[in-house]
Length: 311
Image (cartoon, rainbow, N blue to C red; front, top):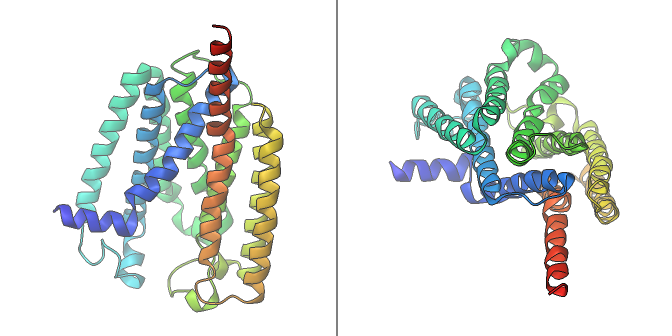
């Protein structure tokens, strides 16, 4: 039993890699909220935000297993569920168990209000897992499909920020919308970046954006999303006094991204499309470190320095 699930997580939801990324996301969310309101995030808020966000991403993976089951059986029988490593029933039970944990954590930390916020994200996740009951239409419009699914990102990270502001002041800090805008475009960037492939790496039945839109258009859209995210990140960072450093860092990243895109379009060798996924991860770490974690550490160090100087 343990070996089966260990194999599943390695193939479909690597716990360590995802945990590190989600830890950065979630702690950035509570840190940004705390900085906007002029305080520091409570430890309990940070832990609960991470746990809830981590379980939401696991639920997204489980929802994908149900949603893509027929296509996986036809085109990707090597995946864990089609080959019988784990069943949809087992995944459904795991998803229900994670929801119970989320509910308990939300009620413990923030009571009914945070519980209601959690239910709102559950509702959207449920609709998304059913393709909003217009599956065929969404499949025929990949851009709208992408947007509708990536809307879950600001909802998840909005809930993570609520683990701070909803349990401290009870009032959403002004300017939080910029952070949520970053989270949306970050999700779009990652989703497009992991679905850009060279012609030799395209698989039958796998709808990558390089296949649906063509390589050139997919790469240009990815670069445009990176640019929008860079602008939004700089604006969001400016509100917490970190605008210039993050602006410089993201514009350097845009230069690197443009160079990668140029090389890929000029010579799309096998495996080169994977670089967009890797660079998307670097983008994500850079932006979220600059939008909460680094500024929070600087604020905390300044406060401690002021405290010791006053002794």
